[in-house]
Image (cartoon, rainbow, N blue to C red; front, side, top):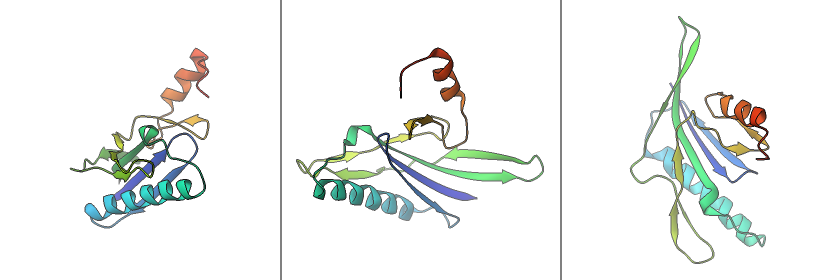
Length: 130
């Protein structure tokens, strides 16, 4: 079983952490550390991370070798991933998403489990979401 933590910072950047170790709070601590580091880096360079646009996926994937299919299961963490705002010092908890929910990143709406139905629907409908 593989543990995945994907942190999204709006539409332009993501952080990926993968491990085959046992699932512990260490993965959340690493995700929080990465998110805080990105927020601090943007602040130092004169920008600001919009914490309301940030989110994360925490899930496990496992392969069934008999059917040759991959299954995904969400993992919930009690406290989630928290980032402290450099502007006012408040702490914001990032939104947790299931692995089948797509968000627009890098101009594509693809969920971590590979489902492209959201992208296809948006393309067919002709929404100007990009």
